[in-house]
Image 1 (spheres, each protein chain N blue to C red):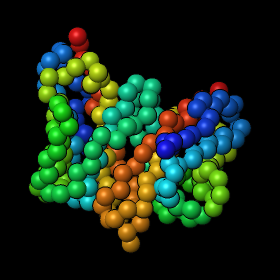
Image 2 (image 1 turned 90 degrees about the vertical axis):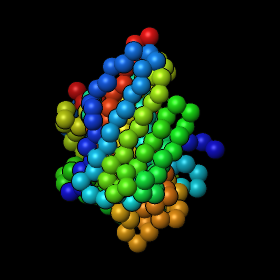
Image 3 (image 1 turned 90 degrees about the horizontal axis):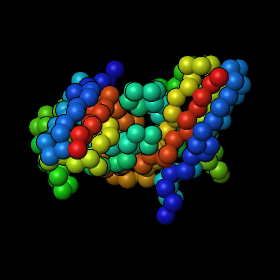
Length: 116
Length: 115
């Protein structure tokens, strides 16, 4: 059973370009979460999605960032017109739909975004 | 909003010494999870605590969840060099309509072990 997969593992963009980060959850998992980690810092929640639905996007910046989890295919985190401050590691996690209070999130290897 | 504070930020120990990291939430948690992240790696799930006052052990690691479900600790006995990494606690926000929920991470405690 493959774990959470993310690609690319490393992404370099120039200011103003777009960045697309992909996440394939573990088989059987229907919940996807995106987190951002700046150097020497903890993980900050960005968005929580289920298939075709955004459940909680309270951690997403109001502009330039969007996320989707289509019926078919991976979840996508899209950053438009990147700026240097977007440079970070972006982690995706997935969890199955379990009983209340017992779900666990499994993290992918992350995408390290560098904005030049 | 809900906050999870974790201390200390850094801990340097001699191999064989014990290590403890503490986690405190501003609000009651439905559960708490612990993760370990090696340098350059990704968070790896260690354990989840759900019940008030719960204590779980994994070999040299002991995890506790406070009676009020607002604090937690991770204790490592006789550290080894393989324990190096950053340990994060993550509090589970109360679920809404049984749909899961986001994790609020502490800032992490970076453990270094001198052989």
